[in-house]
Length: 572
Image (cartoon, rainbow, N blue to C red; front, top):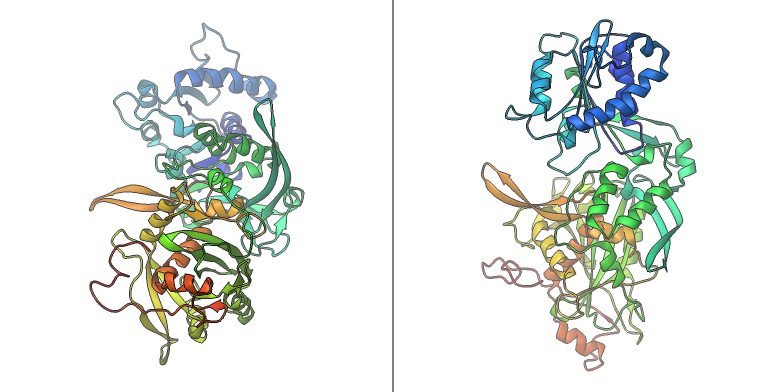
């Protein structure tokens, strides 16, 4: 209510999940307008039927149970035109309750206060007169102290009215303080790490949550729900400048609700995850997240279900190894991937190294991953033939320096570049370290959009063989969080003034895409190495003893030629 009482705020926006008090907030605003600062007031619901229902079930009980409101608003009398189901008269003003589909009510009633509930479920147009919200706000023109409040659970990304309104405001989110590092974060579903068991009862799956924690994005420490509910919390604005324009906006997820447990939220998610329509309801009304259709992408469950038991660190079929490293401000995330004939791939290990990239100890731990000899059941092994390290972010020079000192290990910096016409791999350029032209590292530009398309196409292959992607069971990092990150984006058609463009966008509830980036960089390294897989296979089988057991591959740098196989189409 502090924001509602603020005379500098003329517009309030609340995006919220169910059971977090969204409607109670709206009712409190209406009660304040009637009792403390009376004026002409309009409440708009999606339809007239919704307006009548809300009046009977929410407005009437509020007036009945509040002594001050009851004294000012008389009971509904059919003969009293000033007090009906859709109109409530009180000293100094009148509350008009209507639906977004009623053009006459919206256009004919001046109002200082306008309240809109469930904005994303409103009619697209009030009759033939256009957007209902803009039509209603036009009735506030003569009021210098006007106030508008719109609330809603979110719906479809890109088609959500409340989403658009939220981004015009201060964009405040309810954040909790991490008990380990002291940083402030909104608790989101993709940060909830949980484990569960499944059993079938009467042909229906029953899920039991065995472990549930919140993962701090900064320090990577886990905290229980009980601990986080006791932590300090506050609103943090991403766009505080909007306050000077009088627009404050808030977003609340179900994890901030005192009436529903995290276990219940996860339980509902598990029960709905295989039905897109049920899952959409969970995202919108429970998680308070925008929904975006996955399209024809595979889902996490189907990919996780095909995980395999490897009989050794390296399964048969792997002929070369590469590593992709994604650089974050507080860690390095990496994936070691094995490749065989016809682009068949095997996930070997996915992990992360906590610490800032300017810390030498972080790179020393990455050396342990790169220098390790990964063994087959036979005892023979492979070293990683090339590592691609993301140089984007806030530690570009530190990445350049680390790659320069590891050039003999074939560790190279890469820069991702989006766009439909960017080749997956390009010839490298020399970049100086801190403007020292005598000291440099090689920088490869990676066409990330082309790489992501290859990854998603490979995940659709259902049988082991050409282009098939294998993933291991066990303690190798290939858990629910990994697959949520791997399948975190989809290709979306974006219409612009310059024509239609296909772009990669994140799916709702999939904010972390490091797994997708790591796999993309590892694939790029394999494409750049271009190893002679037949020769490696002969050595592994003992047909060629010229190499030691730790088989290494020679890296062939792309030549600057128009017809270079690295630059022109083909499979990687």
